[in-house]
Length: 112
Length: 117
Image (tube, rainbow over all chains, first blue to last red; front, side, top):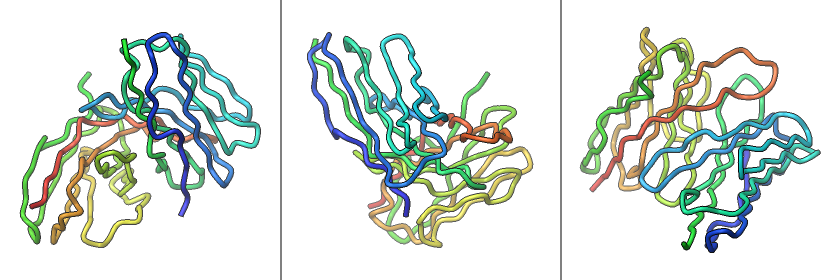
């Protein structure tokens, strides 16, 4: 079945350092979404990327979609303790089905 | 506006038993999806329903079934529970707009934590 690989699995940073998580698919994606799940919480939608090479920014967060639409990244500049949580990419492969395939996530911890 | 609501929040069952989980989507959302999230993993797709019809099924055994009601709420049923069914079950709703590209963003509920002993 379709799979999406996400790395790294864990990332420990000092507050103020940058953080990046990567998502890769072996097949071309229709779109990719990013979610954040706080400890004990549920996934919360952050952004959706649809176009090849697309870059979107939300304050300190920068999201990129690869030119081949097979990979994506989320970069956080100058992390804060409020950024703690697990970040998931979710791949959409198009077609009639609307389901998303989630990566295993990158768990971010931030040391103050 | 109320978000996606799920009940119960926690559930403890014994192997072999059956369980029913419930979900009410955001008002106006016609699509409901169910995901299973095992500790330390990403959510795994189980079902998607839209307008009371099944529109997608993940790689789960026939012990898992679901339905959607005329008011767009949904139930997930799991029969003959196994220890491995212990997980957080997430329901997500979306407006399911007809778009040329992209999926509708998912709005998740807080989930039902199922423990099978």
